[in-house]
Structures are given as structure tokens and as C-alpha cells.
Length: 413
Ligand code: AMP
Picture 1 (cartoon, rainbow, N blue to C red):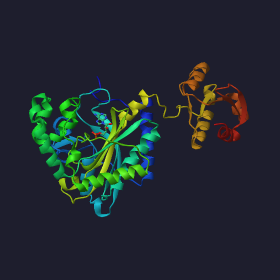
Picture 2 (tube, rainbow, N blue to C red):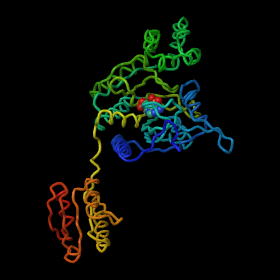
Picture 3 (cartoon, protein in one colour):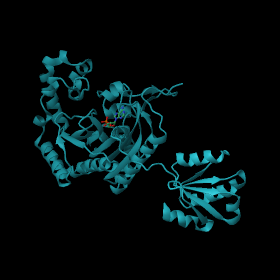
Picture 4 (cartoon, rainbow, N blue to C red):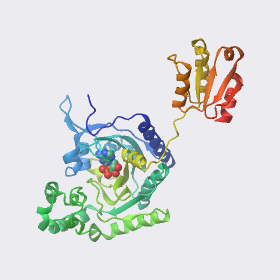
């Protein structure tokens, strides 16, 4: 039996990295005064189909849609935002605003599995409702930047653009249709289908990205209203005052329908997108609620782990334990297990062998766990309550009174 394509088993080092990233993310959420939300992994299909947009790649090609045993249309969540908006509306969380929420969880997209592209992957994200200030966009971008900095990733780049309001986009799409008319035959099959209704999506097509007709297409900047231009400038001013470097990327449109005005993405070494987001002031009303201004982003957690590995960035402790307890024979096992329990109560990381391995094998085990100390317990130690504590690096041994052991470890670890 094999796991499904595009999925990974998470254990060992990978799991530790995932947890490490989650801790950094959680700390930042606390510092930014953002509360946690967890929505179901599956929702009624309409949540994502209407929310993310019928014409987007995610919905037309990538959602895991199925009928459940009650003949309901169900979709595994391909992203976090639409489900959270559904929850905010259903639970009427919008009575006190602003509302700041974060999540960390698995997402599902039926993509062609390849490096950096999984069918089941983790995203960590933030959604903020009820504040239409450009400074809230700055706040969101600054969170992302701090996140990557704390992880230890150097060389990230913030790309930003404005896609204006719906009216600006409609004018722009009409101009794009005019422009692409002579090039339709040069476009990939997907883009041909996008031409009529989702012209904007042609710009972020992965297949056609390098074609001249895409690069030379009219830019959204020329179609923005004064209001949207001013909004973008305020966001840029805010980023400057925080010293956050950015590049304006006028081809950045993002692959989801719900954005307006600010869109942004964080990339590493020009290529790999590590996360992105933007403002979405109309999604709550699209999903049947009151109109609430909102801004959010999602971080691709597996991509971050991949870059950490590629760049050989060590992010976690060496996985060492503080002490490995080594009873000389079975007679000392109960004494040893009780000692281990009391050390754990004092927050030391401790382990011992229960399987009756021979002494040399037990010492090897201590090395495998990178134990800082090995505590050897034989008949004499039990009788005298004086333990043999061996520094596993220098191999130096010291006799320590059992009552003084915790103090000794406190000082030496
Ligand atoms: P998106 O909202 O689609 O831009 O996704 C946000 C981030 O999630 C991306 O920048 C990626 O880092 C990550 N991501 C998106 N799709 C996948 C996938 N299929 N596998 C792994 N990570 C992904």
C-alpha cells in the first residue's frame, strides 16, 4: 500500500520543523493580538465555489469535490479564507469589529504533484475584518515579513500591486480582451477558456508566463481609479515607515476572485512563492453577509520547510535529551523509573531503556539521543542514594547525592 500521490507522511525532523514554524506563527499571532479559529476541513461546495470564484484555477481544476452519503455536495478546503468568512457570518462574529483571526491547517488541491506542489499541504494564515485602513494592509504584510525573518530566511522579497475595485477591473479586462484578440491562438488551452470570462487569470497562467504577449500586455495600473491609486500609495508609505522593502509587480493579480486593491506575495530568491494575500472587501457580501472590509494572507508552510532544507538552515535544537538513565540490571529498574518521573516533573527531558538491552547497547542508545548526561544506577547507587552521573561528552563521571541531582542538572545543562 502507498500513500496517495501529492501527500506526505509527517514525522521525525519534518514534524519538528512543522511544530517549530507553528510556534513562531503562534507567538506572532499573540504579539499582533490575533485570536485562533479552526473551521472544518470540509464545507458545502458552494462556500468555496462561490467564495474562491467559479472561474479560478482552484475551483475549475483543483478542488476535491464529492457527494457524501447524504448526497450533499462537499469540498475539501483548498484555502482558508472562504471557510472562515462562512464561519464569521454564521456565528455573527462581526458584531464587534475589528475581528482578527488566524489559522494553521491542512488544505487540499488536486494539483499535478511536483516539487513544492502537494495535494495535501499546510497553510498558516491571518484574516482581519472590519478595518479598511491601508495601515491594516501594512500590518498584515509586516506580520509576514517578521515571520520569515524569525524563521531565519534571508533573501525574501515582498511583491505588491493594486488590482483596484471591481469597476477598474472590468475596464481593464475589456482592454485585455482587445489586446489578446490577435494572440488567442498562441495561448494555452486553459487561457483560451479564460479569455472571455476570466481574462485577468491569463496573466497568472503558469504555462504561458514567459510569452511576450503576456509580458507586454497592458498593466492594471493604467486602469486604477484615483481612489485606488491613493490607497496603494498609503500602503507603500506605511511599508516605508517600517523599513520594509518591496517591489511593485504590476503583473501580480493572484489566482483568486475575491481580492480588490492591495495584493501581495512573498517570494524567495525570485522564484518560489512562500505566501501571499490581499484585501477582499466584498467577499463577506458575496457569501450572503453584510459588507465587511477585510485583509488576509496565507503562508505555504511546506514550502517554507522545503527552503529551510535546501538552504540548510537549522531551525530547531539538536533534538538532544538532558539525561539518559541507565540501570545496571533489572533490579534497579523501579528505582530508575521513579527517578526519571521526578526529573520529568522538573521539566528535564529524560529517557531510559525498558527492553533489557546490554550495557554497551544502552550507552549507544544514550549517544543516539544525544543525551547530555548518563545517569548510571547500580546496586551501590540504590543503597547509598549516590548516583554516578557521566558527562556524555567529556565522559567525566561525578558522584551526586540523589537529593542534589536536580540542582546539579540545573547548573550544568
Ligand atoms: P495561494 O493563496 O494559492 O497563493 O497559496 C499561498 C501559499 O500556499 C503559496 O504561496 C504556497 O507557498 C502555498 N501553496 C499553494 N498551493 C500549494 C501546494 N499545492 N502545495 C504546497 N504549497 C502550496
